[in-house]
Image (cartoon, rainbow, N blue to C red; front, side, top):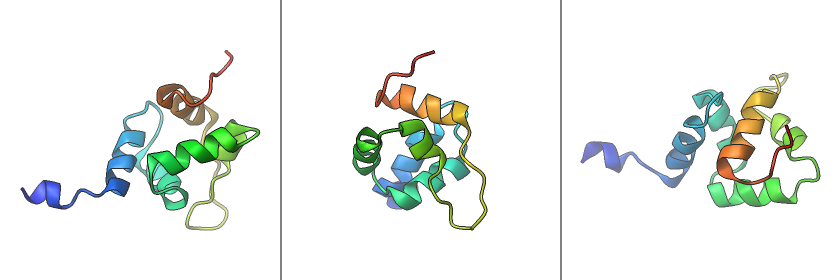
Amino acid sequence: SCKSANMTPEIAFQMMLACVPSVSVTTAERISLSYPTMCEFVDAVRAADAPVGFIQNLKAGKAGSRKISKKAVENILLFLGVKCINK
C-alpha cells in the first residue's frame, strides 16, 4: 500500500516515541535527529551518567530551543524501560 511505502525505520521510531504520554511529534522528531533508531537512542541513554539531563538537552535543529520537559523525559525512560525513575 501507499502508506507502508512511506514508512522508514526512522519514522517508525518517531511514531513509537510520540505514543509515550507527554511526548509530542516535535519532541520525537528532535530525538530522532540525533538518534535515528531506537537501539542507538537506548544505548546512548544507558551510557549517560544523568539520563534525564542528557535527553532534556538534546539539540534541536534551531539554536535557542527549549529543553524537553522533565515529565516527557521521565515518561520516555519509564515507557522504554531504560532506567528506573525514583518517584
